[in-house]
Image (spheres, rainbow, N blue to C red):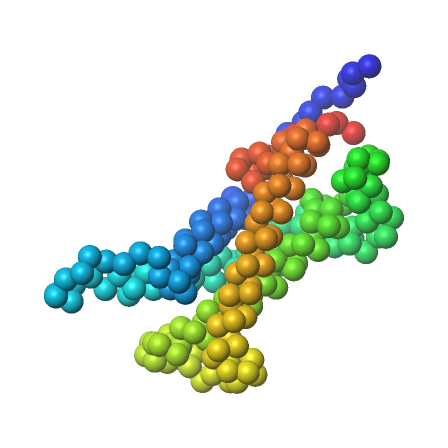
Length: 225
C-alpha cells in the first residue's frame, strides 16, 4: 500500500555553501590535472630554438591560481559553518555523531538491514565524520602547498609567509617530506571524491528525497512527518 504522505520542499543549503562546494570541486579537478603534470610531465611543447613555450611555468601558474581559490573556499566554508545562520543545520549534526544508537541504525540502513534513522540537522554520523576528515586532509594539502609555494616565490605573499612556512617545513622533516605528504593528501582526496559521489547517488536513489538536488537548488524534498 502506497504512503499517502506528500513530499515537501525543505531549504537545506545556502547559496554560499553551494557555491563553495562547486568552486571547490572544480578547483580540485584543475589542481589534480595540473599537479599530475608538474609531478609527471605528460605533455611536452614543440621543440624550438626560441624560449617562448614555458609550458611548465604555465601549468604551475594554473596550479597556483586554483590552489589559492581552494584555500579561499576552505576559509569561507569554515566561516559559514561557524557563523552562517543557514549552516545551523550542519552544526546540529554533531549530535548525531555522539549517539551510538544512530551510528548503528545508519550502518544497518546502508547494509539494507533497517530504515534510515531520524537524525538532527542535515548529516548522518558517517557523513559528518567523513566530512570532518576531508577538511583535515584539505587543510594539510593547502598547508603543504603553501610551503612549496614559498620555496619558489620569496616576495609579496610568498615573502610574508616565508618564515612561518619554513618553520612548519622543518617540523615536517624537510621539503622532500612536505612534497610526499602533499601527494599522499591528493590521493586521499581522490578516494574521498569517488566514495562521496557514490554515496550521494546511493542516498538519492534509496532515500528518494532529492538529496542531490539540494546541492544544486538548495532544496530537498522529504516526506511530511
